[in-house]
Image (cartoon, rainbow, N blue to C red):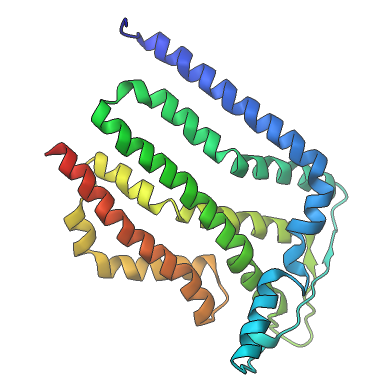
Length: 263
């Protein structure tokens, strides 16, 4: 097989980008059509008292006889819209971002197709595993963000009162902005093993570095968890911080395998 020139690689990249854009557009159209149903039953679900995680908290409280508001609180939230064009713009933008999330496995597949010819046979297995792990961990983070982290954050922030004279009225724009940001942040945060592995390939980190600065990493992880979930309660903080720390620990053996291949 003849060696490809720079322009050949550029043409392959162009075709990959067109395929990715095509998949994005197709999935976005499907989400746009289904958005009224999705908005009612998925996006707005954390606003309802019968949301699965609120029910789980109440069951835990009932089982262990916990009377704290964290486990017994009934929660219902209504949103308002103060922008004439907001419903339509949110309809379009939400369909787009949900298509981006859904198309992530295909994006990783296209990345794999593009870089595969440039890899040695012994490197392909490691890269393929890393991309598969990255895909799985991204969706784990998204699901954790949707079912646990965002509902807790929403319930805390929407009921927090600075003064009894101030009534919390949540706008549609504010709800969607926080919904998308937090869930996507959780998905990206769970890419930590893949990012660390890639940094190790560039020679920026290694196994001994991660072990040496483990305590510093714990502090940084707790700070990141506090930023992602500004609820203030230890339970929510632990829900985010513990998985992130476990991901950090998972990164260490991944780098060890890469180093072994290089030796």
